[in-house]
Image (tube, rainbow, N blue to C red; front, side, top):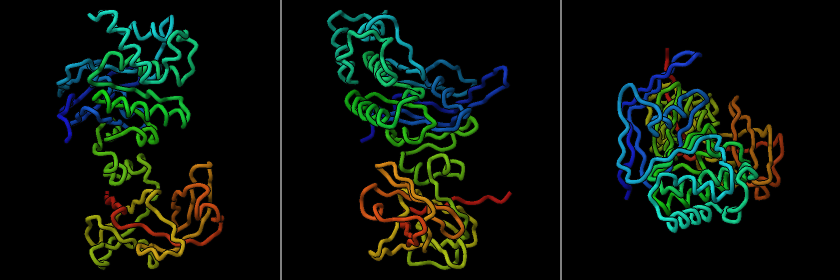
Length: 355
């Protein structure tokens, strides 16, 4: 059962002035829950850091409010954490300045936090000598040593390679579960969002445009712009047909290509057909029942883990992913003709608004 929100924002309006002009951020409703990570996505300048700073109490809203039910601190880790002089352990002890804790309690918390983020072996090293990844771990360890109820992370994985992001995300997810902290993390990187998020909030032009469970936002974005932002790479225009296939609506791309969907729609409406790359399948003769027609392979990129395939279909470029070294990924060649399928429940529709 989901725990009650520990930090809630409602009716927010934040107004900022700078030399480059004014900026307004609005968010109707946003909640943070224990043992959950909310990832805040959006392009540069969309207001991600402003929202995080407002949740932290560093920006005062012109309207609305942020309410906290937290019994522990609200702690923020900034994009470029800077170490204090001295050892790694000393950097954690500094976090307790002004806190009424015994020496034994401080040492216990420091040891626990260093172990949690796998840098206990660096305790006596000078913090200034740490690598970028170790510095990120130090910043998180310092935050968790305070036993926060809410943790706010501003691009805290920036600069890490893919392996570093994955490893740190696993450790952070474990820490979230074990401590019950509520997390909000700002990023513009979809990979980081998919590694960590329980829920996703999308900001666009200073407005909270969509918020929901991770898979709901990834698979059912509410606009074309959000679809592109959350990695729904396969977007093709079509018109909803008056014909149906069982309990599925049919969307016509051209005379030879129609796509079945369970999405609610009305005949005659112009829509974007959205299919995530991981939900577009290549049929290899097993008799897929949700075929959407044939395409031609135009590009193959293999990074050793996944194979990204570009396919011409109905005049559009579609993408799908295969596991490297397995099945079709070992034999597929550029120029090959392939049959494509997409399960109707994985086909999303976005209305095309006529201006």
